[in-house]
Length: 412
Image (tube, one colour):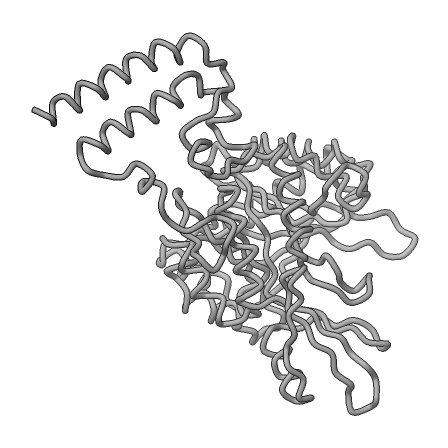
């Protein structure tokens, strides 16, 4: 009898609260997630679509009622790792995709291939850097290993293969080749013709456009190019993707040409290259300061749907000295650390590893790089903001310890 009295009491309370809450709660009322202290981003669909009315409080009382009757604590339903603490897990509610940028720097360079075949359970897409667009719209093959064999192996392992094509670099005192193409509708069509032919030659699944240092004046031209490329390839079932520089406003000249919102209309995937925070053009510093990465990601999410956005992560580092700056893969960096007896230090503010050493010639060097621990913090942002995935430059340069971290978040 006491059991039924208790049930009746809960029922009366529920009806009473429904009567009050449904009539007075405004359209922006908090949801169950808000009440339980769960982080919600500006891109959360329940917020952006204004879906919460009086239902938030109703959900709470329904949960309390059911929990009381069934003996389940309502708050236990929100258990699990916190999004902000990478050491507590990288579990995500939605499936995430890992993209591996793939490059061969010389004919016998198999580092990307070896990394790919060892990690087929994690890698969903590879983007081989095989082509460069010239000022006349032609495409030059960069050589490397047997393209057809790489594509066959990848596709047999259920990987998507995208042609990564970049733009020829600008010589001193000359017009940027990418401007020449983008500003000319005839050359744009010629370039797209050549991209399409290359994709079909090797039975690829689409394209990854990696146009860098595009003049700000070509902002609309780049958008037009992506619109025309999309119109050509998407009806054939091919993917159209693009890599973009990070930015936190529209005043950054090197990133001004990327109209995030417009590009999102035509690209299936947008990879934000959130690395090279410091590099060959600067003094020593983090490759990807965690604060800089997160702010860049938040800015991108103002314009790019989260299901199209991929966080670019680095697998390498830089060695700065008076002799210049050199890009190094993880293994070479660890060799330097051991050779000169310098332990790796940790900068907690940027969540980045580094060390300094003095070479045999007496010249001082400073090295900043990415490793499994630093990438764990970047990968946590993918879960925190619920974006589509990550894209790493490049396969074969990484710290082996990154793969257990990647397996925790990415699975096929």
